[in-house]
Image 1 (cartoon, rainbow, N blue to C red):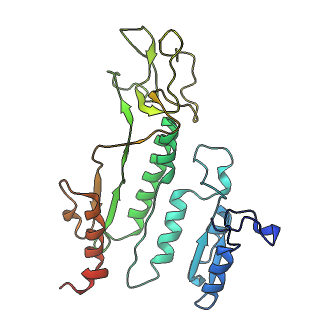
Image 2 (cartoon, one colour):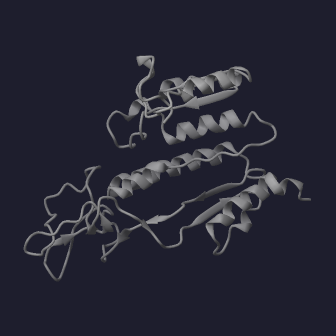
Image 3 (cartoon, helix red, strand yellow):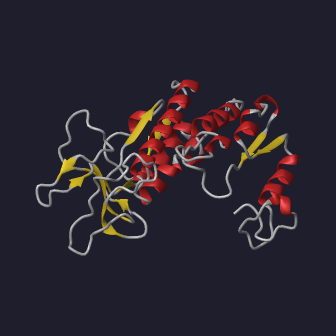
Length: 268
């Protein structure tokens, strides 16, 4: 979306824009009049940025989505934790405060493909980014909110024993005597029923494969979002406002109020 579909300069790489605009170059031209700007495309470039002498920073590390943490070749791109740390270091230079939005976007995309192991690993990566952020900020003057905009159809089923592998498939159905996994989805691309009407036997499947698609009930191209409430965790000033049940559009109003921006700027 940043580069033209038919670039004048092949070194730009091929994008999808039909208006022939190169938004990276536009960004450079705009920021050149305001301060020192850096555009980075690799993990090394990002970690080598001189934060003290950089006013604007843009990082685009993949032509499409970022690679999964467990995916081969991801060592050329920064981790979510590293991107979060650099972003906070950049923004902390502003003595008036800052707003930072960090998304573990590949959690959602893994669930859509029924990649349960991948989704859980991306959740751990998101946890690491939050942990690093909390180490870098002062909770006395910084509100930290962690939430999701929706759930997924992932289920935890059966009666696995304490200590069992959450990714395991040792449970046996008392109806068809076939094994089933602790984790499964209500829908998604992995649903499979053979001609006899029985479930597929997963006993020989490699459940530890990062790209293994955990069983789903209804076969559709892409697993859907769920409908239940999602959790909201908050620490810092005014975090007590994010308790109980509320509509998700309430969250940005709390953030705005805590930061004293927008209409809340004039509050006493």
